[in-house]
Image (cartoon, rainbow, N blue to C red):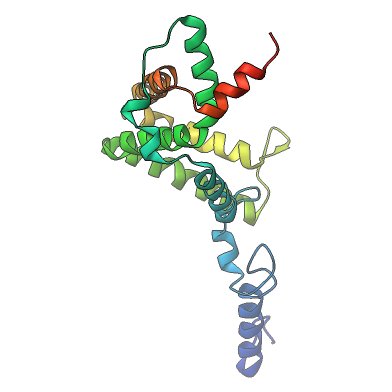
Length: 207
């Protein structure tokens, strides 16, 4: 009787072909260039890429204003009235948008680093999302007749990690970050005098 299992050289050929499928160059990278087929599952989901994040950060770095001018105490003064304060806030948020963005990110990073439980909660979220995404690559995940897209997968990972975030006091951390951001950015924008170009632009605006 002959069995279905390959023998001898046929077995080696079969194993080589499977290895070729597993480590094929075509499936290795989202662009289809080099690498290993099995490693393709380790890439970020569609719509997310390290390049996009780096490009966004580079754009912010290019448009950032010098920090020495940003914190120059000689440029701070009390607004003359409420209207002057509103004009300062609007123009300074527009002028120092990138600086404020990095301040916000810095506060988030400080909050995460200073709370080990938040680090654990984030690790649980990332791990849950990673596992769910790997499963979706192997076969489509369908819930209530609908395929789980990347946002749905992130929502599911968030639901799985929600108890850990609750134990870590994530709600209080979010409110702390938002409060600190509004206080720091609001105070700077209200008390930082406008640049000369901004003043000229305001004077040229029709009343």
